Amino acid sequence: MNQEIRVRFAPSPTGGLHIGGVRTALFSYLFAKKNNGTFILRIEDTDQTRFVKGAEDYIVESLKWCGIEAEESPQNGGPYAPYRQSERKADYRKYAEKLVENGFAYYAFDTTDELTTMREEFKSTDNPSPQYDKSTRNKMKNSLTISEAETKELLDKNTPHVIRIKVPADEQIKFTDIIRGDIENDSNLLDDKVLLKADGMPTYHLAVVVDDYLMKISHVFRGEEWLPSAPIHVLLWRYLGWENLAPAWAHLPLILKPDGNGKLSKRDGERLGFPVFPIAWQDNIGFRELGFLPEAFVNMLAALGWNDGTDEEFFSMKDLLEKFDVKRINKAGAKFNFEKALWFNAEYIKKMSVDELLPFIKPELKKANLGAPDEELKKVLALVQDRINLLPDAVAEMEYFFRKPAEVDTEFLQSKWSDQHNDFYKSLIEKWQNTNWFKEDLENSFKELAAEKDVKLGAVMLPFRIMLVGGKFGPNVFSIAEQLGLAEVSQRIVYF
RNA sequence: GCCGCGUUCGUCUAACGGUUAGGACGCCAGGUUUUCAUCCUGGUAAUAGGGGUUCGAUUCCCCUACGUGGUACCA
Image (cartoon, chains in turn blue, cyan):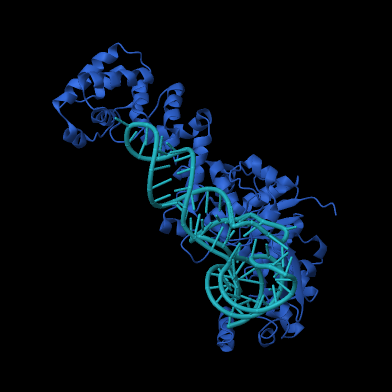
């Protein structure tokens, strides 16, 4: 079998794209590239979702930020257009009707009220949610229970109706999942899923099968929540006569809430205080805005449910492209751990060269109205790089190199102050007029002076730092002094 | 309720049927840095329970428990 590898990612643009979706895209993309295949973006917009403004652009931009781009997509086009579900509307009815003709589906005219009534009627402790299936379909109003003539009449009169799949009795429906292996389902437990809704739009079940067929998709990655409906899709591929063209499925484990129960949802971000979107979506801040590096974000996602079998934890996109292997994707759901995500980010920041890092830092500085020539910025960045966990941290870490600290802990200074201090710093400035302006020389002369004056080093070091940077933080104080220059240092000294 | 999927430190995870069950995050302790962070060293902590199969089960099988997903004219 020398089939071309075509992997599609088909997000619904309803609510942006949360990290679970991004991970599905990432794994699909890696698998496609690893096998010299094509990665395809297909937008699963439906009657309701296509009206969410900007959602499609959002998905494209999110993926792009992560370094994922589709060869075929609504934007780039491709040989199997259209790439938006909503633009294929006319096709779906045709296929649904073909199924009816061949006896694999039927028209159902039941109203919502009638369905509710049926569910109420058959409800019991043993069966709290009765299905529209082989046990109930004969009691409902559909083309199986009414005459052909009556069906035709109802259709001619444009009576609202749906098309349902007729699930066979007593069959074991089998398929092989790439991640989970052989899966078997008893057809008696499946319900007659709606394929075409009363408004003429397909449900997910019909749409994916038709689209994947039309787009010659070979592999599908999707969330585990789709596993229970996979047998319906298997049936559809078979009934539509395309059984041996069906794609291979990989049902990815879910990303779960950190605090326990349920899969991570779009709402959890706000509740738990971390983003669930790659980049900002509507009112929600994204990982990008929080100050994540895209490579760190991608690495973190890949590590959630996948590893290469070694102790290595760092994978650039290039590494992933080389080492990714579907066989090593975990089966169990993973609780999302924001602490670890943060750690990945800090590690990436530390590992980058200042040249690589600067372009990410500059926009942050600009927001805080901080600017300087690149060479200056790089020198300072090198000094504080280790201290940055999230990109915007750079502002607080770098600010005092370029302007006098807005707030200085004067209370602390005064509590430790004595006349000795006034004398010491005054002499220091004088001494430094004739000192080589390198941190080592500054440190030596500082220590000499302290010895001369018989003051304890500890008594003058910390106040010195506080005067320069505003508080008890920052890198080596003499590196700071070196960077600041004599004029600025003497400006920042205060006397009480 | 029923069906599917799953289950190794608190979390993410590694371990051809033979390991003192490994790594990472977190946390704790010590060291370096006369600040804080980084960094270094060490510590903490796990095979859900019960039955099999086997000379030997984290690993294979069964049962139970628990978790999770589905059970929509949502995806």
